[in-house]
Structures are given as structure tokens and as C-alpha cells.
Length: 371
Image (spheres, rainbow, N blue to C red):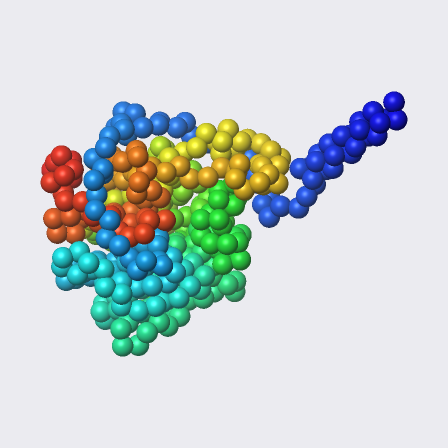
């Protein structure tokens, strides 16, 4: 009898400690309830296909990965940067040549008029790089607060640089990286993301805010509006910069079957959007229940929501019409962040791959070549 009492007491104590841990152990997120849009899944216009299968992977240095974005300069040269801060240049044959080391975690890249690059560095802020002068910081604080999680950018013809800030809550350097910090922000779902503009005079202004994980940004050909990806709501916004609607925004893509990442202007009025992962069931199911999301954060990392390996891109026009959705369900080249047609190839970036994806346009069954 004594043994049973001891055993049951021990079990009760373990259960009490477990419940206490799951209920009260501090977590970094303070979630809010929200209502997710219906998931269209990979059906209809998003119907599953394998048109990205067989893409060639142009390898980075063996110890580097995650070319999250590419810049394409006026000569058609492609510039990717790695998660480790390396900067490469693509040669005509497709080989990636290591150019230098930027450090930190560069995300968005865009050419500058002086031949250099603008860089959205998630650890530091908005930077400028040139082969001769190296890297210099342009913006490292906004509204008196350190600039953390700068994500993508778009450069206007007059030299203004529009850049997104995904969250003011989670510094990717402090929380283990951009992916880790993004998962925290998506689970919390507070609308702290924004878009700002840096002028040639060195001024900075927030032009749009209240987003749940702001991500890709791209200018329309007339530069009268900015397309903005809101990752946590699976949506694309159009924010007007000029005209009677200036300063307002409208949602032009209501819901996507995955998390939108970069938006890259193709230059012909169409835009490539990377879907970094399909929508897992858990985040939408838990959206109305902040307390449960706090509990999930106390579970081992291996059982928390995570990206699903699946390659998918979406091409849209400036009104949000879906034009093309090439995919590779195998997930061999996963965490796709964006793409752009350069010459006769589609160049694809990724948050986790060991290089850039490259696929001949002809291999896409004419899906892109018609546009």
C-alpha cells in the first residue's frame, strides 16, 4: 500500500509540475486572436503541378546557404547574398563567383544607380555596398528605435529606397535567425510591421504600418504604387504613392495557399511572389486561441509549427490577377522566397537552399513565356 501511495504521489507531482510548466513558464510571445481567411489549397488557379521540377541548383560556397533574394543590375548580372553574409555574382555560364563578405544577415538586395547595391540587412538595417567602398550603414534606427528585421526593398528612379520592416517585436539576431524570429512573430500575430522610405537627402519616413509580418515590396512600372506582401495573412496589398488614392492601400490578393515572401517586379507590369511554405493546418486552427499558442511555445521545438518543404511561385499583375503558379511538390528546393526571369532562365531564390535555382523558360511549358 505504501508503495502505491508513493507511486501515485510521484505521478501526481509530475503531472502538476507539467501543467504548471505548460501554463506559467514565460514565453517570448504575447499572442492576439485573429480570424484567418479560408485556405484555397493547391486547387483551382493554384492547382498542384510539377513545372519547377528539374531545376538546376547553382551552388554557393560549400559553407554557405540561403540566398534569400537577388539583385539584377542594368547589365543583367545577378547578385545573390547568403545567410552567412557572403556576396556572389553570377557569371554568364551560371557559375557563382564569390565577391566579398557583407556579414550579418542580408535579405533584400537591389541595384543602386552608382553601380553598388542597396541591402536590407535584418541584423543592422538599410545598407549600401560597393566594390570600392565596401559596406556603409544608411539607416539603423526608425522613430528613435533600432531598426531590426529589415526585409526587402525597392529602389525608385529618383533614388528613394522603399524598405519593409517585418516586426518590431523580434530581433532575428537575438532569437536565432530570421526563420526563428519570423515563426515567433507569426505565432504572436501582432501588427507591428511597416514600410518606410529613405530619401537621397537621408530622411526616413514610415509610409504604411499595421502589418502582420511585412515582407516583399515592389514598385509598379509607373512608380505610383507599391505592392506589399503581408506574410501572416497570406495577402498582397497595393499601397498608392501618388494620385487621388495616395496614402491609402487595398488588398489585391485576398488569400494565398502559402506564406508570401519576396515580391520581385519583372519590369513588364507583372510580379513574382515566392511562397516560402504552404499553410500548415495548426496556425490557422490556433488563430482564435492566444492561450493555446502560448502553450505551444512551451512545447519542444520539434512539435511546434514549422515550414513545409514545397517549392511554389506565384506570378501576378498589378491588380492581383493570378497569372502563373509553377511548383515542385517534392520540396527538393524548399523555402522558395522569390524569382525573376533573367534572359532565357527563371532564377529562383530560397531561404534554405545551398544555391540559386535556375530553370529554362522553355521548361515551364510556356506558362511564363506567354506573358
